[in-house]
Image (tube, rainbow, N blue to C red; front, side):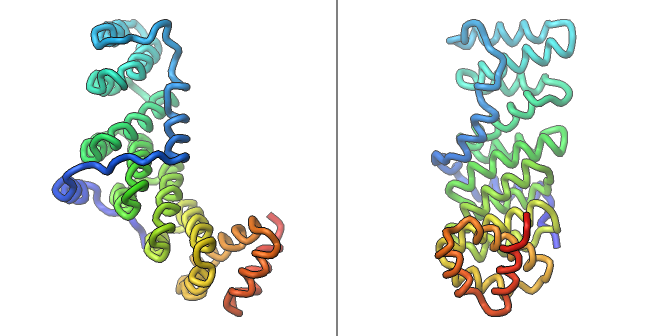
Length: 275
């Protein structure tokens, strides 16, 4: 079973059903994304422009540079400078970047995050229009992290409907299910169980059991015992064993005593196995 769906029907539903974007809530991992994609990575400027006119002049000078490499570098610097004072100019400059680069990827992440904090509809449309699967993955991952603060189920739906794969997608899945599991672990688990085998499912299950066990260890043990798919159950048990090893010895013993008989020996074996 796979969570991939068509993107455009979901976009229509989103645009009709949402009147406003969720208010951003400060979270450490979102800050980490912003830091990775943020101003610390931009090329240094001699004097940050303080008005829109110098920004436009900076952008125009960048456009006129003779080589693609010089033009891309100068455009990226101008886009970073424009994000605060003139987002529309920043968007126009971004669209003129060509090819792929780490700097462009950082801009995609940061710009998608900033757009989602202001208007999720606009951010989703912008992400869907990116040129490559990697760019879409970066953009939708950032949007999902913003939504996960207040609407983790909708963030999960966004990732499912986007039908995107990749490292950034997998990282976004983990962030979303950690939020979701805090409020509705069974629902978060059902979503991840629908994934095809791979890093997103494995890491998502581990994130869920880590959150769930700390809040309701008997609940997570009951769920583990009832997983019908043997491969998914083994991945979830491995995640539970890894979570066990991170606990103090007394808690490990307590959690194991609460495990169903048919799972206890498996958890003990996984816990004892070398990394």
